[in-house]
Image (cartoon, rainbow, N blue to C red):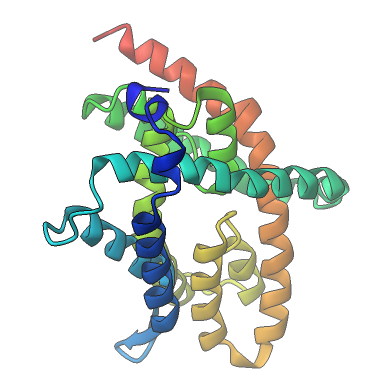
Length: 268
């Protein structure tokens, strides 16, 4: 870790102003709740509380009036976040191990869906390196950058590594734009490519709960008579996708991203 995190002491962690600010942001975001609105009476847009909490946190950090939230508090929050996410990492490990038999029962369909992330590495990695993100590009462009991949990045590179910073950039953007994108793409593709609704329900299960909910909600609006079946298909597909994405990321995507990074950096 860098000096900013190693200089944090117990007094910084117990900073009551920081915790009260986070609590207020949480309460406001929860009170606002999920907002749904329609475009052209056909496209349903969903904005989740995560989006509001992100913007409120950004406002608290950048506002000159909130003087008690500065760079030091931001570094403290990063350290606290690392501790808080540990139960999630443990849960993912337990769920992955307990349900590994599902991976053998699903056949090649969801495996092919996860392997589609290879295109992200092949296309996004060169662009990220070209834009000067360097080691951040490994975290940014090797996956969809959600919680399972975050656990792997923290374990391999550290919570304050360049790779983790890159992942968090895309993680934050995914919170803001990911749900909106999923709502839009489900509506648009349903009209352009009339596949069975079950296929789109499975396709919404990319391993992100928020994006899955956004896409599935739009799908349920389009097909209300079979909404229960759509939710069932999407839920099990998303669970399997979360489990499978960890292994695909560890053994295929991340090593591939490292090789591409080494290869492209050698030409700069």
